[in-house]
Length: 202
Image (cartoon, rainbow, N blue to C red; front, side, top):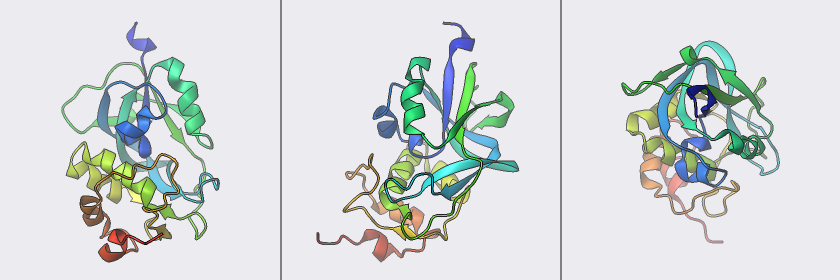
């Protein structure tokens, strides 16, 4: 296979998490990167699950972090279905920079983005069951990478729901240890550590 036949998706939300990616399709190696020229926001991308997601929009002089994931091209229909509501667009190599001294692979880069941000609201809040999956994936690349996710995401004043005991996110990972996540989230969320940690009786 020639280098030009290799394809890569820039994951900046739940696709950062390897277990979550595996629920959709086959993927290969990942490279932690920063994506330049886009800004990540919390946005209502679908009302189906009663929760908001992260999305990126084009924004000069802005950046967000994520992972560049090698994906066989025959798997793209599965990821397109997962990212319904987003548009898939090609990226140029100069829009990416690596966290380590890795050289980026040669191939075609793609990102799922949106043109408009719809701010989360009460019926479609930021759901912890989704956010936990993202942050657990971020921590696989180190604390600094996880903190960059929080700093480089807009919309933390939006409504936030602790749905850990009754997840709204269909690819939730209920076995994630949340103590470390709570400490990361405390400075940016509208919930206190107590509210982040509380377990409700069903």
